Length: 194
Image (cartoon, rainbow, N blue to C red):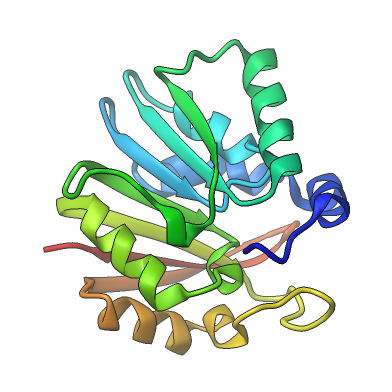
């Protein structure tokens, strides 16, 4: 996701940074008290806040490679009064995920997988980070363009492309659904580490 810059970050955050759909994600992803959660591609951090506040003793580690996005996220965190024990932001892409193996209950990637620089490698890191029985929850906007001035892996904006990536990375028990809201149609895919 290193092709993002401050201009892209500001534009993206203004248009997509605070969706009502983000507030539904903790419930859709079945966040439970005490969960360790990683959010990959956290952008300006609005979803990260929703996750951190969704249940007792949830700990969220949120990554984004763009300095401006991390600055926006930290400002939102400060305004919300969330501690670093609840929520930590790191300037890093998916390929730099650096947590101990088998420690995470849930990894969330909302609208970001198609931007990862090396999706196969990064998804391998995600798989390793999850505990046995841990889940990956991701979503993509079915109506957003897959081309433009941003590098994207267009095959990862489709169910077939996402399923192939997840199966190649070792995930099983894949399920999917489409959530239609006034903000768009969102493909949600869940996968389990057995």
